[in-house]
Length: 233
View 1 (cartoon, rainbow, N blue to C red):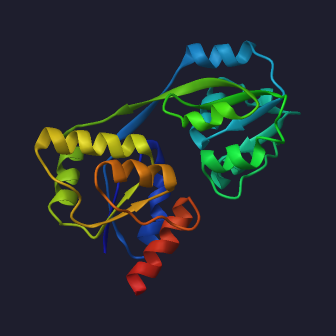
View 2 (cartoon, rainbow, N blue to C red):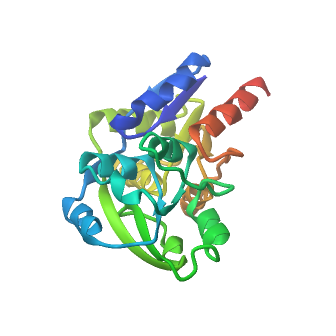
């Protein structure tokens, strides 16, 4: 089975688990990430009681500027097991929501973080729902920028022409960039089965008239489990 991914180039290694399971992986990054030094320095100078870290990329930006240490001794919530693992490598334990998405964090931790000064560490495309948690201040540590070169065009065409079995979308921005390219190329919708890594991505796809499947766990391990079940069924 041919499965398409549009992960950033720095995350291409995550796709090896699908190759090992026998899936044919097709990949071209639709997005790239760029650290925002101004925001990083603003975070460096601020005081806070707790932090919500929304991605592994956010931790990597802190690593680059030697600022992970600012999280030590604080209450930390991580979105995703990979984010938590990255923090644990620095000796920082974090709490995880039941589901790895912003809405679950807001629902589960709003009361626990009430009255605290919260550093919200994420990209410039974060879900606004987290701004409702406690006294949250957003630090957009990195920007997400689209990539629309020849390799992206080739793969988007394959998805829209039915030359693959599945396409996996792992963010709302990825969905938007995909359909921007479709519009520019005068293409239609994906002509294959579509997987969204979580509810926000699923809702973004619905805006473009596309229904999608969502794994039980909003991770690439969850996507792999879903693909396995679909391949066997």
